[in-house]
Image 1 (cartoon, helix red, strand yellow):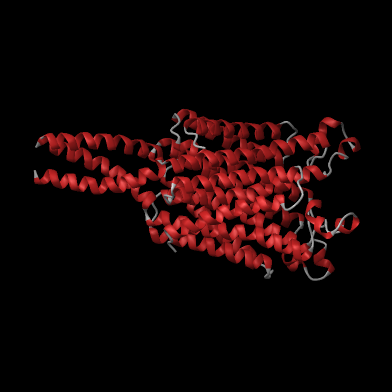
Image 2 (cartoon, each protein chain N blue to C red; image 1 turned 120 degrees about the vertical axis):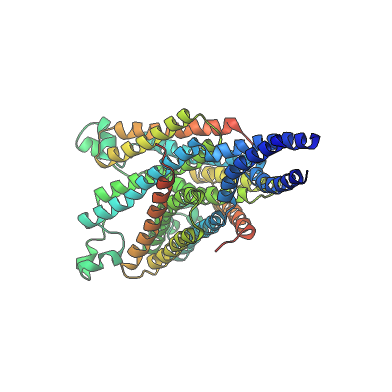
Length: 172
Length: 172
Length: 172
């Protein structure tokens, strides 16, 4: 009986540790992270398609092999040019990369730091909403400070998550 | 004895949950993800070396401090220029970033969603193969649609993984 | 009693497996990874602020809507220009993306591969230190090979981590 109690005690201690870990990855917070990360990455991937669309409708390419279908020689060369709309989409795409990469990296660690579900959802929703609005503001384009503020909102969310990660467990 | 049975029952329930989690990270799928992610990131890192190689052989630099070894004044300034081959490598590198970042992020969540090993391997192998071929097609350059199709293959794989992640557990 | 022993034996086997997993994520190595990744991503995010600062002090913008506060017509158009300092910050930012993305991806897998804490800390510290110095060397700018060597240090650390990941569990 005593041995059994010991097993039971030992088990529950170990279980407590395990449960903590399991709660972190199997939790709704992690599921929410997975959902919003996937959505915002799909949004970023859409930029490639928009770039391709503008390149083809504006006939503005970077590579000679891309203009081969328009004929040879000088006729094709004139399509090797920069276009204002194409460049705008490309800047928007790069801005996505610069901001979504920190969100994914810090967001993963944030999701594993065991935040309250409602707080985590607030962070993820604001970030993804801000980035979608940022793209709309960039491509329309909407007058400033629309784009600036949506960039700032996403930026602030990432800083807030980083603060929690460092507060939860700083190991230098 | 009854207590023991209870412990046993309780244990097996908890074990089942834990085992699920353990299977996710310790699984061959996760190992495969780790392998292919590392390979495709090393491939992307190679682009930095290729850029440096082209900058030095073509003598085309962006920063005045990089041309200091070629002398001073006007003699060095003429190397501050863009070169067609250097720009081509840089576009290829940026295209890698734009496509490999979504693969890593969505791929991690996909690997944790418990796909069949063979399906997962198919996704990872097509993606990494497509990206390696994309670089070859970009730098040779091969006539289109070589580059376009290899880009599309990697893109489709990532979309397919995203679909499974969102289907497995959508939490909005 | 025999059943109890069986449970105990079975438990300890399963526990061993679980403990391994728990050690990976709850370990100090993972905590160190979380800390250094967050720091280096915050450093990268700082580049956006520095870019904005230079754009405003140098009055050099990419988008017409950003120059609307300077008046209309030709008066505003003259601020749509590239500036040497702005371009320098942007190249530094892009170099961060190209190098920090592989570090985060490979570093996560490396942290889960169960390295010795001291070895892991050495990797993370050199990488983060090298990237901070790289930014200083790029923006000052310091004479070469300051920037080149700091880039190389971060690059070598990432290769070293990738080597361990592939050595620990290669699954092709």
